[in-house]
Length: 554
RNA sequence: GCGCCUGUAGCUCAGCCGGAUAGAGCAACGGACUUCUAAUCCGUAGGUCGCAGGUUCGAAUCCUGCCAGGCGCGCCA
Image (cartoon, rainbow, N blue to C red; front, top):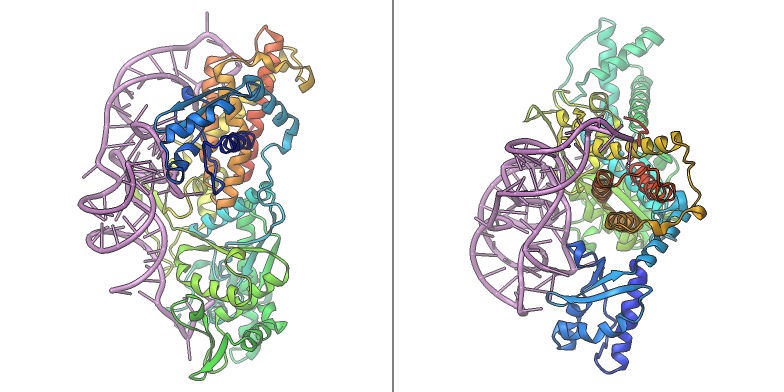
């Protein structure tokens, strides 16, 4: 709809140019927006003001040049007005609006999908928490954002894959194995000192207990060189299964789980470094091997192989991202906790060195979550093993509210998560406001059915009966959904979806209080049922993008 | 010390590739249920857009400098 209008404005600009009113040496970017107040019109363009400088003319004067041709299509634009400093306001023809609405209905379930991502194959990597303990709340936000962004981008036409990178290599894994081993020995009465730098959480004891139950004291041989490997593997698997379970319950599924270990096993880590060495991006110094990341705006070079030959985490990450490129993704999208932002420049350097520069790689940082209970921040410390897990929160407030709360703020805004608010089933809680609208519409449909008004097919409905201001407002709001999807996806801003839904639903609730849908007037009832059908399906689709359920009854 | 994010109504936040009287939700206050779900609706009140400069016809938005909070600055992951 906006595009139609945009083309219309462009043609008016051309006409003004042909008539010698405008110079237009560069094609202007025509912005179509919605006026603050609906009374001013359905849409507006700022193009006259944008052009003022280059044309060296008064914006209102420029607008004057355009209005004549903008008035030439009453079937499209019913009324054109110049307002304020040089806005051109449009009132669309009611029939045109209804026509757009009709074609939206024809798209049925697909309405809202768009093509802005067409041809882009994207890999969204998110969560990727180390398998050394259960997911905490911060991971939860990353999970919700990543999963919903993936869904959103699919809606916007991107070809999306999702992936969880498992850091199952390195010192932390040894520490994990050792932690379990010590707890295992404790269980069997061979307790000793438990070093502070090992994992303190109770979940380690659970794993140890499980091993005792299954294998008894078979792994007690302390000098057994295989023992640590055993404890490492079992712990990792156990924790990873827990993570998968937690995510599954949180409605987050990954297309692939990618193990760091496999990169080492297949020689891809070696190969990646060799490749970069051949290109001159890797060199040896002080007995270590370095990536020349400073050549790409990183503040200094980074070690990839330490003195002594051990590879850094970064080293494997290089190979991992080369792997991603080889799999043919033209957009590599990593979602990281904000605490990793210092890591961004070196990773950008890697991708650039690998020839997959700025357009092909993007990191989305997700800021921290602060839990609030009783108006107070909930203190957490990983050290003491005292922290609130994602599973705890989901258990306490439910998946819908948890996901909604994680998604309703911009990712680069710190999030205050009020546990008590999220649990409340009152108007203070924004989740229910949206879900309630969905349920309400379902209920209206049931009423219609019970009164013998069969759900109408599009062909047998006269949309011309939708002629009230509220009808048009609602139609316009519904019609803007595909654009919201496209913009949110392009900007990787999932939070626009709940904001949009909130606005849509507010209009619906308001409509509900003004217009009775199911009435004696059957043709009108049918038209309104179709209007609500579109609203309901947009709500359902929006919630589906968020991974929040759309209940039929509340 | 350097870098990134944030600072907008009592609270939580949108708006930030410059544009119309700065918006929403909640909280506060006043109204609306014999009606398709009142988990709703209608209305009122509430703001030096952190501070100070600059660019511009026009700045919450762009630039510079401060201030405050958060997070980073490893041959950790």
